[in-house]
Image (cartoon, rainbow, N blue to C red; front, side, top):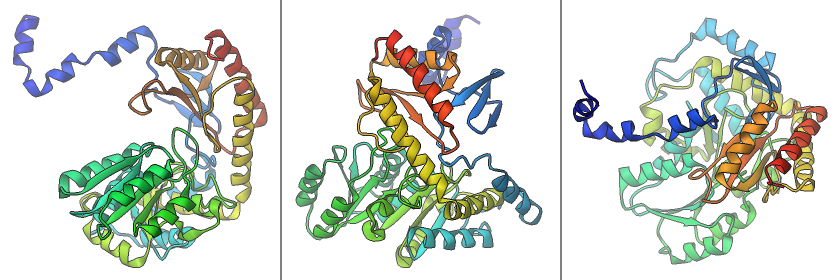
Amino acid sequence: MSKKEEEQKIATVFKKCYDYKDASEARKSGFYPFFKPIQRNSGTKVYIDGRELLMAGSNNYLGLANDPRLKEAAESVVEQYGTSCSGSRFMNGTLDLHEQLEAELAEFVGKESALCYTTGYQTNLGAISAVLDKGDHVISDKYNHASIMDAIFLTLGMKHNVTLHRYKHNNLDELEKILKRIPKNAGKLIVTDGVFSMEGDIAELVKIRELANKYKAGVYLDEAHAIGVIGATGRGTCEHYGDNSLADLTMCTFSKSFGSIGGFVAGSAEILDYIKHTSRPLIFSASMPPANIAAARKALEIIKTEPERVHRLQAIAKKMIAGFSSIGFNVGTAVTPVVPLIIGDTDKTFMFWKSMYERGIYVNPVITPAVPPKRSLIRTSYMSIHTDAELDWFLEVAEQEGKKLGII
């Protein structure tokens, strides 16, 4: 069969898949940084293609994903509960473990109630789409995570007549202008990350709460990169500002500081009961498996009893921000262990990623649409278990390779 005949047999809906060449061309060029299979993970090191690399792009902020206590906790529940709940939370998929973890999480973030989902992404989809209804308005920071935007898009498709507004990153003057335009009695929900996943800066949550009170809006706070990261004891953005009442709903994932997978949303008992009974992503998905629940519970215990991990992580953030700034990198507005090296040019971003990879350091290149055009960057992120020697070596290599490419 000729190529032309083969093409004629392709269903029209799949033609775009066969026409897509970007990834294959990048692979051929040697500048393809994605889907690298990690063969082993050990502390701050990962092993890819038999090579050891320093991991400087993980969200394992407190170094708990390989902690033997989490492994032991996960293993210990499998004998009693098995490997899967085999059902949704709504039906046969709720374990006493789920409810124990939820009670502990609610207490930890200073809320009445909490509800666990199977992933952090799903938590945003499920909670936001449940709370918003026809006629409501949702107001989102333009740098919010993709899962927040997908939650909003899901809501727009499901319920129609929900209006989306977006304000420039941390620009509260624009946020207030938007709030002023919305009818006084309309439902309003302000949605923001606590720590922004690419910029590494923190939401102006005190001022957001003031505006929410003024215009009778709710506040939904995504703490995926904040819990375990900021605040005196790692409780996140509200603790950072010293006020647990700044957010009506607090969400976090377990795939970062908690060293597991899953997520939760916390708030008043009434709001959580409503979400529990109206959230389609919760009702129609299998629930979080027992081993992951046990790992998250053990991680929460460690966060509460070992605050020195959080303090070490915060010290590392200051060290790396100061270090990169001193050698000429643009780190933007970063104040957390998420430190972007803003390059701008996409080609140079991939070249810098490759040079770091070849030198034995794993970092993440980020290009549009994950960031705005001409803001391509290398996303670096740190763990409390990184040593000063590892961090100093990273700074040294980054300076050498950055100068070669004319980035600094």
